[in-house]
Amino acid sequence: MSINFCKFNEYKLILLASLLLITVACGPQIKESQIKKAAYHHRLAYGHFFENGDSDAALQEALLSLQFNPDVAEVHMLTGLIYTGRSDLLKALKYYRRAIEIKPDYYEAKNNLGTVYLSLGMWQKAIEVFSDLSQIDEYRTPAMGYNNLGWAYYKLAQYEVAKKYFVNATQLNPRLCPPHNNLGLAYIELNDEERAERSLKAAIKICPQYAEPHLHLGQLYAKQAKQQKALSALETCRRLAKESDVGLRCSGLLKQVNQP
Image (cartoon, rainbow, N blue to C red; front, side, top):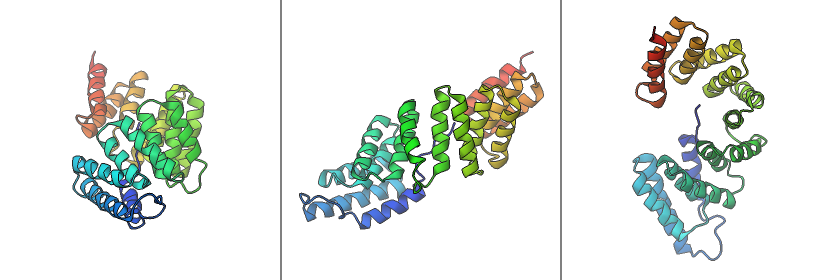
């Protein structure tokens, strides 16, 4: 299953605009000199993170910015992204939540909050976030929101509900690969192997370099005792995913399927 945080290019445009408007909505208790210092460190954090790939320096500058002005939602968002990249998800939660408190219509922060909940296995919390986002016309990635909502229900073993949301995602954006893959998984759990195979093949057709549907297709073929098809799918998966978790799973399954 693929979980996507907000796209960096989209976020960069939003953040660049916020750097120009950083004095807006600052409380009267924040001095102008503090606002300027906060904006300066925000710009440095942005540059270190997006342009230099230096998360340590970016985090230091973001935290400095918040010391000078703790009420800028975009800085909390950036800090959450930095912690997400460092796999410190509990701290990321804190900053995404604060960004939303400051700016309730900050849909990118809500999306990232929901994806962190998914990563932490907090399925019900994720459902609350993505159910809310799916009702908002201004939300930029509704198909991915439906996919994430479906994944939460899938992990709760509510496969019919999950299937509904995965179908919604494929209808909203037919070129988005994860919903097709996840729909295949839902069909497998619902014992509809024909539709499962069709959905997994759709994911592969749209995204030939996407390894995960090859894994699930290989598992499906192995279950059906279609050894050659299983071997072919798993070998493709191993080649595409290499030493990733998915690739290692495919390598292990290849050995099992090859056993006499």
